[in-house]
Length: 114
Image (cartoon, rainbow, N blue to C red; front, side):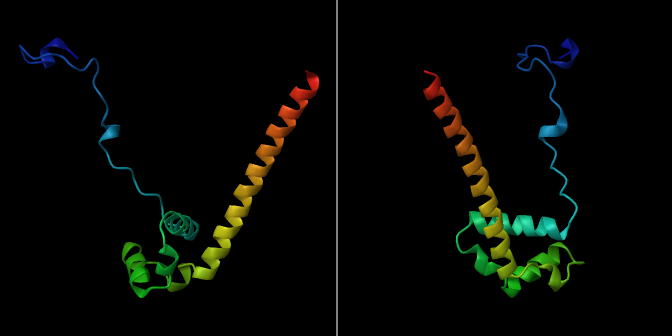
């Protein structure tokens, strides 16, 4: 900091001035149906019993309040949500299997070289 910016007798604890980035709220992403599905999937996967919320009128009312242009047909049905979560889980499991197969193959080739 510039010496004149610090009052006399004050200890200069900061070596540089920080930016406002850490104190500003992030701008919410633009609303999309795909984004809605992603955020609802995150809610269902991270919270117990959240899948039961999807078809509750209070939850739909909340979504309509947050996004007034949202049509009821835009809110994913719980079956669609379950299918999407299962498909995503299968994708993740396949990625893990592929990764583990590569690790095992590398380990096996190292053992054979010795």
